Image (cartoon, rainbow, N blue to C red):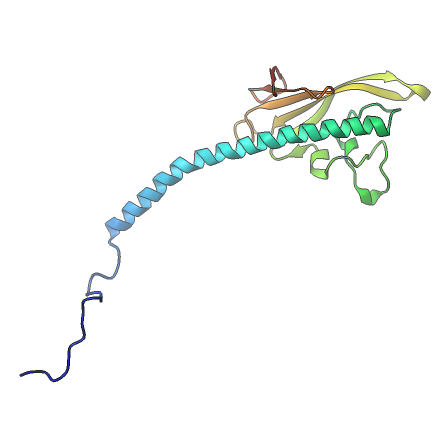
Amino acid sequence: MKKWWKEPATEGRFRHGEAGFTLMELMIVMAVILIISLIAIPSMLNMMIQAHETSALASLRAIQAAEVQYQTNFPANGFACSISVLGGSSTSGPPSSQAAQMLQSSLAAGQKDGYTFNITNCTKTTGTNNQDLFTSYEVTAVPQTVGKTGHRGFCMDMSGEIKADPAGGTNCTIPIS
């Protein structure tokens, strides 16, 4: 018997059992994603370490600029021998020799972007009115976790010359241009 209605076309439609990916296809896709991740993660970690080291170098330059400004603004003190002295909040009043307000608070606290900063090796003389006058200093920047937050340590003297320690400490011998 001939049908007087037309059957719907099945060409563009899914047939029973063809409605998705097989388990094997999903496993292959997951394996490809895993391989790409294993390749990308180490290079991303190295990029993060490089970014932290670049930030540390920029922070050393900011500390150098703050030291020069501190020496200009407070000539009786010379240089600051404490990184916290270069910080301070503008809400606490005008700048002073104990809170110069020249560095951002995170850097003045001594830690920024995986590095710890410190001012060391200060040379002092006795100035007018028996006040200590700091005539030289050295700034150090060491990774908080060597190999994770940075590979190299950095040192900068009062002339602004930056040197690196490849072991991540403060035995800086390699000049940075």
